[in-house]
Amino acid sequence: MTATGPRPPVAVTIAGTDPSGGAGIQADLKTFTARGAYGASIITALVAQNTHGVSRIYEIDHDFVIDQFDSVVDDIHVDATKSGMLGTPELVQTTADYAAAGRLGFLVVDPVMVATSGHRLLAENAIDAVRTVLLPQAGLITPNLPEAALLLGDDEPEAGTPAQMREQAARLLKMGPKAVLLKGGHGADDIVTDILAVAEDDDIAWREFSHPRVFSPNTHGTGCTLSAAIAAEVAHRRHALTQAGEDPAGASTGEQLGDAVGAALDYLARAIGSAADWQLALNPDGAHGPVDHIVDITR
Ligand SMILES: Nc1ncnc2c1ncn2[C@@H]1O[C@H](COP(=O)(O)OP(=O)(O)O)[C@@H](O)[C@H]1O
Ligand SMILES: Cc1ncc(COP(=O)(O)O)c(N)n1
Image (cartoon, rainbow, N blue to C red; front, top):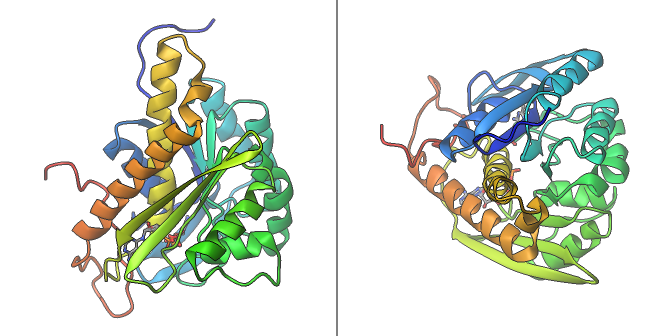
C-alpha cells in the first residue's frame, strides 16, 4: 500500500555521531530541523569526539547498519539523503547499493575522510570504493579542497585558484556524480569561494558562490552542516513536486540545484557568523567549536 496523505519533506543522514553536538548525526538532525525537513538517521559509527577532537571510534556491526537502512527505507518516503562518515569499504558499497535501488531519493555525498583534528574517518582502503561505486550514484558530491585532490589521485595537488578548482570539479564530474560542489573553506583568501558544476547533457552548468571569510575558530562540522542543509533544500523541492504528482527529478536541474546550494550556503554563512565569538569549550585553548545551527530560530 502506498500512502497519499500529507507528509513533510523527509531527509535522511547516514553518518557517524558527535556527542558534543557540532558535527555528524547530531549536526545533521539539527540542520534538518532548522531547515524545516523531517529528519531520520542511520548511524554508521559511534565516535567519542568534542571541540578538541576525536578520542575513540566504536564501529557498529555492518548487519546492524543494514537493519537501520531497512528500518528507514522500508517504512518512510525518503526525499533526499546525505552521507557523511561511512568508515569502511563495506558501508560505502551498501550506501551505493541502496542509492542504486532508488531507495535514498536525491543523494548528497559528503566524502568525509579526515576530521579537522586529523583523525581518519574513512579507512584508507575505502577511498577506491568511494571513487568507483559511490560517486556514480551521487546526485551531488561536496568535497573540500584536500578531499577533491585525494579523490582524483594519490599525487594530485590541492587546487589553489578558482580556475584550478573548476578544472578539478570537471574531472570529478567525469567520475560519475551528477554534480560537484568543490568547497573552498580550506583556502586562505579573505573571500571563501565554492564552485558548483552540474552535468547537463554534454555540457557543464557552472555556479560560483562567494562569502566573506569569518575569522572564527568555530568551524567544527561546517561540511556536515552544509551537506545536510543541501539535502533539506532538495527534499523540499522534491517533496513539492511529488505531492503535485510531478517528476521529482525536476528538483535537481542545474538551476534548481544551484538555488538549493545557494540557500544552504547562505544559511551556513549565517550559522558560522552567529557562533564566531562562542566559547562553548571549558578549555578554549585549541578548541574548534560548532556553528549556530538554529541561527534563524528565536531563542
Ligand atoms: N571561516 C569561514 N568563513 C566563511 N565560510 C566558511 C568558513 N569556513 C568554512 N566556510 C564555509 O563552509 C563550507 C565548508 O567548509 P570547508 O572547510 O570547505 O569544508 P569541510 O568542513 O568539509 O572541511 C565552505 O565551503 C564555506 O562555504
Ligand atoms: C562523525 C563525524 N563526521 C564528520 C566529521 C567531520 O567534521 P569536521 O571536519 O568539521 O571535524 C566529524 N568530525 N565527525
